[in-house]
Image 1 (cartoon, rainbow, N blue to C red):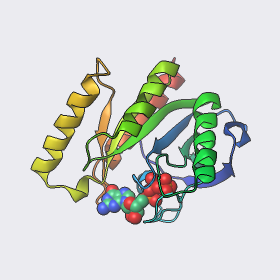
Image 2 (cartoon, rainbow, N blue to C red):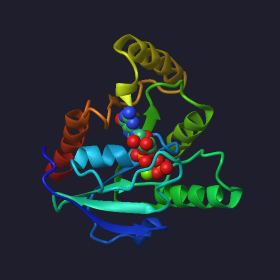
Image 3 (spheres, protein in one colour):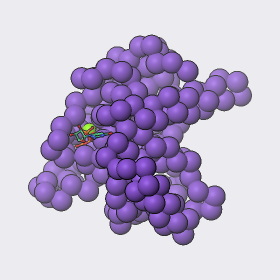
Image 4 (cartoon, helix red, strand yellow):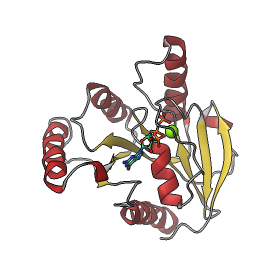
Length: 201
Ligand code: GTP
Ligand code: MG
């Protein structure tokens, strides 16, 4: 699949605040600053489409982008940014859980993890809560450009061992860099395959 058109459509604090066009949605979630908005820009090949920042807590709403006039990418706020005020953090948490629990057209949630770090407690808690709710998810590692090949391989193997304590089989896992485009085609094709399955069944 190719992404030939990507247009910002709506920003809301409620899952149901979108355009009501009943198209499939693929949403991106993960810790603040993990690179959700950057990956969306990379996939769509449009630098300023989703707003990014080196300071965590940039994305504060449910932002929908219509892709190829037929499906949506959804950029969500991040979780786990300790420096944010308690009130603000609670607000973002409620926006995220509203989306996760109520987004009727969400086909899949991509949970992003930083490829440099061990899986954090907050990520495991989030992933486990998805498992409990039966929400379909896949994992995307970000920032693969920041590690050497051997360090990256070792990190991913260690993290896979952690995930294996909770999931058998393991969830699907993709590896990306918004900086150098690593994994871009794989993510787009991954989404394309799911969309094909939806339309042919
Ligand atoms: P919030 O909206 O605050 O939750 O953050 P986010 O997950 O949307 O992160 P964002 O895309 O804004 O990126 C955060 C920072 O990481 C920015 O400074 C990006 O330039 C940087 N970044 C994101 N992806 C990559 C990547 O693949 N490689 C490198 N080197 N930097 C990245
Ligand atoms: Mg963001």
